[in-house]
Length: 109
Length: 112
Image (cartoon, rainbow over all chains, first blue to last red; front, side, top):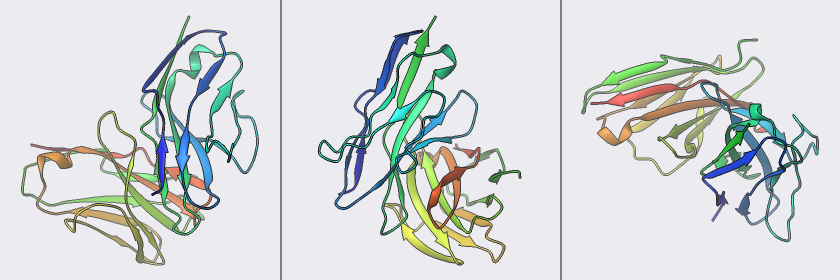
């Protein structure tokens, strides 16, 4: 079964601390993985795609096929990073986007 | 580019009624997917439309149906509303799934 698991509902860190939001997936084949972010009162927006291997707003994510993980990292958290983060995968066969439950990141001053 | 637009933004309906939600995809996108997001949960896939046909369907009953028009816009219809249908309904568009999906702001449906 295709599944995305985000084990932490809430992650609270202080400003300037490193951040790692965990994401594990279950998928037979080569998935395409994404991180989406939803800031307060804003729409869901794409943060990262694993294919592009880029860094957005200081965040990076590396696909680890051996551990079936796609953790989101940032070396120094900022208060404006506080938001809900969703990990998602797209089935290459169906084009269906499957989301994890989401992790709320709270960056304290 | 207005991106993905959804209407209405909020809606209150009574149990047993029917509702229609609308979505206009981002310019250049031809695929529309609908999601249900309950409070505190991740979005759950309802179905996807491409070339005016339902291509994929999630684990939702037949009370949930949809349509895609020639201009790629889409409607989500829910019949015989239940209290449990109260949620944020999100529309997402893409170009056949490539380059990720762009989401609308959603329609907040409350069933009383």
